[in-house]
Length: 566
Image 1 (cartoon, rainbow, N blue to C red):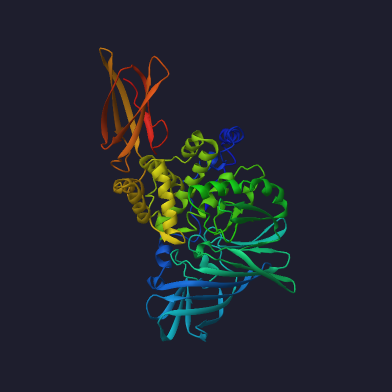
Image 2: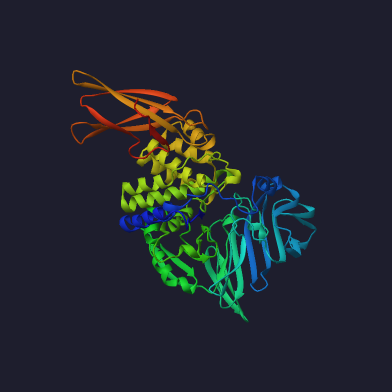
């Protein structure tokens, strides 16, 4: 998911500079020039820590859903649905009950378990199904229901309108899939899915996976979408509107062809053709850097929807807000981010929402990696500087109410950037590939990622993850001064560095310092491992030093201030 705050008033200079960067450098995204200047966190309706604690019942972990068969009949004028969901799976241990998530405003007209009507209770966000017989292994639940789904979170199910036409879509992250279909809404319970969407025949209906079939009955048309790879419930999505479509393809190095399919409203068609045309280049880079596109037998697509805070990485079919289709490639970074999520979030899904930085931090750093590949080292540094912040609102791990705070995105990206500095490029990119291959189509935690890092690098990274992910709040704030002592053409530079931050006592980190020679244009780079709050470094040179620069290559998430000379 990519959240955006676009500042319309009060930042004309920033906007002009952002536009200039796009024209001159052709690798920047408006997002990272003007985003989040006025927003520190985004609170969305229907979600808080209390809800999350109550939403998952312990008994849900006993379920292993294997398949969702979801039939949705859409009625835009009434803003309602008539639906049937068939859920099949396995119980990890025998039970007389099955627990699912499902909002109780939708009216259940029929429910059966293994083909037989049974008692059930639907209250709040929980659907409890009771069986007289002990359920020992497999189960099959069929639920028929109808009504108007609640639209919570970022708009979990919306009956919208644009260009005078209906546009229906879902956006279920993090815990709102159950506003429109019964499910085991744990991110760890991934399953296969068949999604049948019925709407007016003038509409094209889109979902995850590949198009397995379509049929017409009277004035209505049904589209059948099928997944070949497991999917988390929050990533199951529908989009239905009188779209115009166009296609492209990506050919992998081994000759596999991935269809690229785009769905936009008629008024956005020409803009979308230009904005979306670079997807094969994005796919080529990510496939080379991370591994083969994870859903190669299905598709990748982008569908226009009306959530104008950004975009959402629904598996194989990203939803993007209408405002971000401009025809000027202003939001290429958003498209890159959502495509990266197909690896980080969709294929490798977090074990819990405490680990959400594994989604958003990875996708954000993937943007920086792409621009680095496209335009060089300066583009990487520019991207990382645009991700900078003080990040004072909690820890990166378990952000709870702040699941979609920019800390999760931007500090998450910085953690990977600093890890890359710690590991070196060869080891770092080997880690990404190994992590992807190990947890593809599965779930991973922060501890799992840390273990992969330690396994590949051979380093103990406990302190690194403790201070940057698990416990550390804020960032190091450094103050320094320096001077030179000279004896017989030998020069000793003394650098005093103090950590001034208040939220976390001591950060330990690698710090690069560049020493510039006085009588020529040369310089010397030295690296030091800082382990104390107040540090004094002494470095000998044969040449006179005219100035120094800390962290010249922007590898460290920090604030640096030189003390005023007395």
